Every structure is written in C-alpha cells, then in structure tokens.
Amino acid sequence: MPDLERTRLRQVFDEDAELYDRVRPGYPPRLFDDLAAPPAGIGAGSRVLEIGCGTGQATVPLAERGCRITAVELGPAMATVARRNLARFPAVEVVTGAFEEWPLPAEPFDAVFSATAFHWIDPAVRVAKAADALRIGGVLATVATHHVAGGSEDFFAEVQECYERFDPATPPGLRLRGAAEIPEDHEETDRSSRFGPAAFHRYEREITYSTQEYLAVLRTYSGHRALDPVARDGLLRCIARVIDNRYGGRITKRYLTELRLARRTA
Ligand SMILES: C[S@@+](CC[C@H](N)C(=O)[O-])C[C@H]1O[C@@H](n2cnc3c(N)ncnc32)[C@H](O)[C@@H]1O
Image (cartoon, rainbow, N blue to C red; front, side):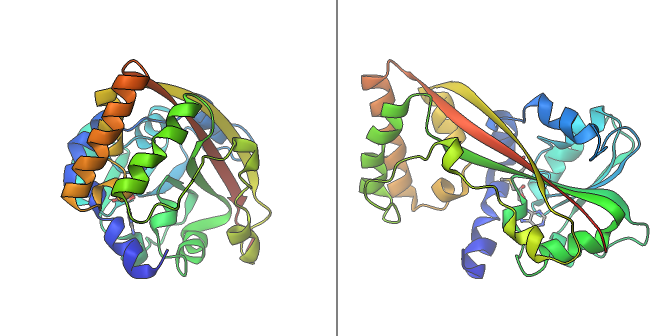
C-alpha cells in the first residue's frame, strides 16, 4: 500500500472507538496459550511492548496472564477506551502516539507484540525498531487476521456484486481464498539480519452475525470507513438486503488468525 494511503487509512479506526470496542472480535484463547508456552514464553512477568493496541482486544488477555505492558496506540480515542478497559491492571500503560516516532525506553522488552496492527506501521521502520526495542533473545510476536473461504460461502460470492457496484476499487469476480492458500508471512523477518527464522501458529474459527451485527463489524473496517458516505450507505444497504432476503438474516464468516514468532538474535 502506498505510504500516503497507509497513513490516511490507519487513522480512521479512531473515528468511532466505542463501536470498534463493542463489535470487533477478540482472539482465540489458544493464541495466548501458545504465546505463554516455550519457546516464546510470553506470560506472567514478561515485559511487553504492544504496537497498536486498539481498545485492548489482545491487551486485556495478555494483562490477565500477568504481562507487564506498555502499549503505543496512534488514536487518542482508541487509547482512551483502552485505558478504561485496562484500568484494573496497574502494570499496563497505554501511550498515545505513532510507534515510528515513539522514543524507545532504555530498558529493553522481552517481547514486542502487535495484533492486526503491524501492517499499519511504516515497513521501512517496523522490523528494525522492534529489534531495537527487544533484548537479545526477545520475541517479536505479530498477529495477522485473514478473511477466508468458508462459513456462508455463497453469501460472500454473491455480495461481491454489491462491492462491484459501490466500491470502485473492487476487482471483478473477487473470491475469498481458502486458509491453506494463504502463504505464511515470513519474508519480512527473514530479510532482517536481526531475527532468527519465524515460527507460525494458525487458528481458524467461524463467527455468526445477524444483519445488524455484520454491518456494525463492516463499519469498523478501514476500507469501508474510507468510502464516500453515499457509496458506503449504498453498499451497506445492498449487503443488508442480501443477508435478509437470501440468508434469513444471519451469515457466518470464517477467519484465519496467524501468529508469527521471531526471536531477536543480534
Ligand atoms: C486494526 S486495529 C487493531 C487494534 C487491536 N490491536 C485489535 O486487535 O483489534 C489497528 C490499530 O493500530 C493503530 N495504529 C495504526 N498505526 C499505528 C502506529 N503507527 N502506531 C501505533 N498504533 C497504530 C490504529 O490506531 C488501530 O487502533
């Protein structure tokens, strides 16, 4: 994604932090078990730097497992809601700012963690700065979320017509890929001389949404938020019609969550 587009789109989450907090799904509990288990060992007492915590979707479960967390969050409204959600954890601090510009503290971290946010950070900075933030042997743990084929498959094919009509950026005939067709994202850490080879854990799950629940989730996606308001309303009305008229008011979406772990070596 071009730099300008990335810096514009990554700001839109902050427009409605309460909606994001209400409707964005969290992460499978097994992900946090895998983080805590060897070799990552990110659990009770670990000093964690989180990048882009949102309103705390992954921060709360990490804090519940006893991590001591500094979270850097770009959006002031997102950070405010995160502080509210994390108020009961004295070892968690949420700082407002862009990770790229945030001055690293002198004491290194055991882990740098980022859930569905690392791709919003400047690619020229993110891996090197994460390495700078870590002690030797510390772990960079990033979580990517993919929308994959499965669940109400026919719905996701059919609804492309709405996207083609209302979103000019939609390529014709777009279809979701199966989870097995999505390659592991190891190039970026492999390219850096400061991390060992990446290890991966994958989790698949399905979530069923009513029409209104699904529209609310779509309203938290950067691409949908950034659409011209008239086009966005038309798109959401079109999607609602498909769910109500053809799927009885409920659809199921399949998610692939990928946890990437890379250890700092140098
Ligand atoms: C898709 S949301 C993910 C939020 C949360 N971690 C989750 O799992 O739902 C991406 C988050 O990254 C934040 N973000 C984007 N660019 C950032 C940057 N340069 N520094 C810090 N946070 C950033 C956004 O404000 C947003 O809260």
